[in-house]
Length: 264
Image (tube, rainbow, N blue to C red; front, side, top):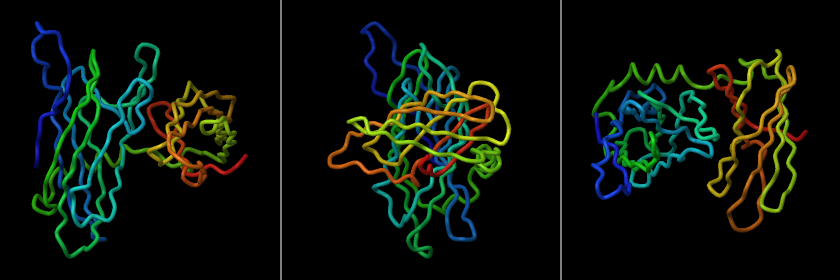
C-alpha cells in the first residue's frame, strides 16, 4: 500500500496558519483477474468538510487529471467511477465525493508475462470553504502487494452507474446544431416509466479539446430533454462521432449511463 498526503498550492494571508491536511490518498494494488488484467484502485480518505470531484465536476469543480506516462507494460487503463453526489454551491452545480472514496482502475498489460510498473501523477481538486489544486504521485510494481484493498474495491464496483436497459431507458437521440464554436446539443431520452424529481444530465465526449457544461434538463412524463453547448478549443475542423457521446442522468441517488446518441 502506497500512501501520500494530498498537497496543494495555495496563497494565504501572511498572518494565516498553514493549511490543514485535506486527507490521504492511497493506491490499492488489488488483485489480478483470470484474463490477465489487474483490478486496482485509487482510494481517498478525505478530512471532514472536504470534497473532491467526479470526472466531469460541473462549473463549480476542478476536473481530475491522470498522467500514466511514466508507466511501463500498460496497454489500457479503465477508470470505473462510483456514483457521485450532485450538490449546489453559490448557485452552481458540482458533482463529486466526500469522506471515503475508492475509484476502481482496471489495468491491461501489453505483455501478460512481464511486470507492470505503475507511475502515476494525479492532479485533482479539493474543496471546503476554498478550492485548491492537489497532487498525488504513485510508483509501484503490480503484483507485489496482492489482495490489497479487495473489500473496498468490490464495494466500489457495485456502486457504479446502472445501464440504460436496467433503468428502463427505451430510446435516446441527439440533435446537433452548429453554433460557430462547436455544437448545441439536444438529447431526447424516453424511459419506460414516468420520471420523478429533478434529474441532472451530463453529456460527455472523449476529447480534451471539447468542453460540455452540465445540461439544462426538463422532464415531461416518460420523456427527458437535455440541452447543452459543446465548445471546441482545438485546431482544425471538428467532427463528432455519435458513438462516442456518453450521457449520464443523475436521479434519486443513482446514475444511469447511455453510450452513443444517434440522430433524432
